[in-house]
Length: 431
Image (tube, rainbow, N blue to C red; front, side):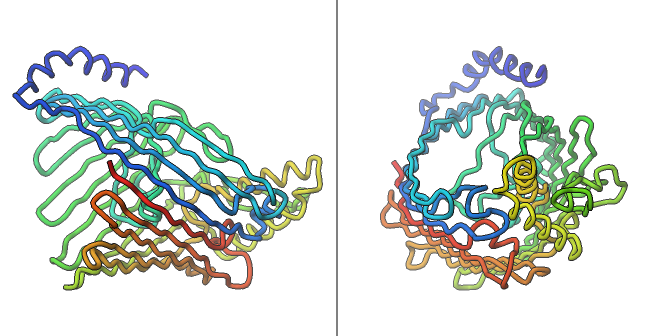
């Protein structure tokens, strides 16, 4: 608390001096970008044990959405700020399970990001606000980023909401940057558990053809974690990268058989106090052809994920929870808790080994970009295919289409637990 209040007080006290120093004849301190999106979404809830009769997640089949995304910026020599409010509205229709036939409208007004940044010296920057810090070159997930796991690359039309962060950046040299990052509010996971604020020290080293970053994390009464990401431009056509994190022990929930339990088992963080080192890392690369298209290949190793025996126990426990979900009473409540644990175990992916391949075609006839992607889970022999099309109809209007289809290997798997397929079509307008 004292840390970020000190930052605000410092910036406000220095504001007159900073403005005077920044008044170099330039008048356009304020600028903005306004986007409006209108799109429809059709998604097909899976008939899986994760969502029995669509009663647990109550997922709609269709929605019509409108979003207004204005971004306002202030920039002077020594003071900067951003304000990004959002207005969204969705009308939704339910066609599956116990909620079939229902419909409703949902509107929301909120601020996705806002921050104030002051430059105390040419080499020191301080900022505070609701910010979004995304880093790393990986597509599937960013293991080294404990603040934001979503890379905004799976569906570029969906935004990640910012978090309240205080940040100090020290530009030690042209090649080395050190950042101190601190969450200023407690957070909650999907199970409603309170998560204490996280602090991080991030050091970034940059060369002529490479970038390496190390991130150390600290959270009160929790284990130390070390993250890192980097990339190397091997040639004009080849880019190699990695992104990972390691820690002693893990908070991930694992299914454990328990004969006395009404559902036959329980989810527990059985490696919470372990000295065993757990690692999650992505590694990949891309090759750009002379035509401008790019082929990317990415591997994910997730040691905190389940092995075959744990996966069998997981699906058995999830199946029993689904079977007793409608029983009523204590067992029904227990089933609901187990389904909540099953959908958010704390691991970025359920199993341990994944492969992603992507082919990107840019500026097709100078107006369109097309992404073809397939993600494959090695242990479950199942995957998910997706396509992303962005077509520039004019300088201000873009048509987009995002489709996702999950494979079915004849039973429950990670990719068909929630949706089997989804289709998103819409327009984005810039003002």
